[in-house]
Structure formats: structure tokens, C-alpha cells
Image (cartoon, rainbow, N blue to C red):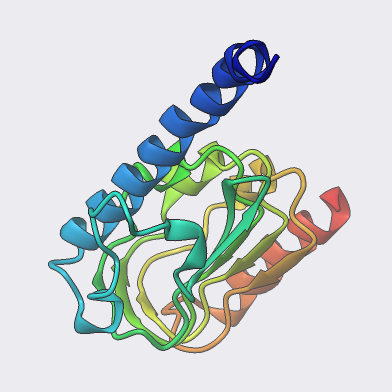
Length: 163
């Protein structure tokens, strides 16, 4: 009887493993993209390292739903493949040294409802199409954004009309 139970439950257990491995791989790719910041050196490729237990990661039902890298000394740009983490709802990259224009790759995070990019070093205008993030209910772009106050007002007016 026990053998039959194991055979029946085995496919269900195995089906969650590839997603878990894929998400860990994506997170390690993000770490590599940012040249292995010391603040996340505990992110490990070891099979015994469950990424859902890493302090910066929030998981629900073994899927990554949140990434909190606030004040982690992250430098560079936001990786264009970050939304390969398909279940992301929360991204917090506040208070780092992220540079460049608004990361339009975030438009692929279709479940995102919380986005904090404050206190980084973005340049240029904030695209008015940020409303492509249709589930967004929290957006923080404050701090060191190099844009005019009129451009910011126009953007936020459009975003909050769509919320």
C-alpha cells in the first residue's frame, strides 16, 4: 500500500522541483548580472540551499513572489530577465545605485502590484506607458530621479488614472 501511495504522489512532488530549480537559477543569474554583490553572497547554487529561505526572497507555494533588495549595495541596471520570475508581485530595489533609464523590462512582470525604485540613479524621462503594469497599486520613484517635476506630474497623473 505504501509503495502505491509513493507512486501516486511522486509525479506531484517532481513537478514542483523544476520550477524551484528554474527560479533559483534565475536568482543566481541576477546575482551574476550584478557582479556578485557581497550583500547577497549567501545566494548559493547548492541543491541544499532553498532560495525561499533567503532573507531577500518571499515565496508563496514554493514560487518567488517578492524580491526585496533595498539597501543591498546593488549597482548597475535592473536585469532585463528579472520578470522570468513569473509570480513576482513585489519588487523593492530602493536605496541602491541602480542606473539608467526606466527599466521597461519590468512591463513583463504582469503580476506586479508593488514597485519601489526610489533613491537610485535613474536618468531620462519616466515613460508614460508605465501604466502597462496594470496591477500596480504601489509605486515609489522618489529620490534621485533626473526628470522635471512637470514630467513626473504628467506620468503620475496617467498612472493613478489607470489604477
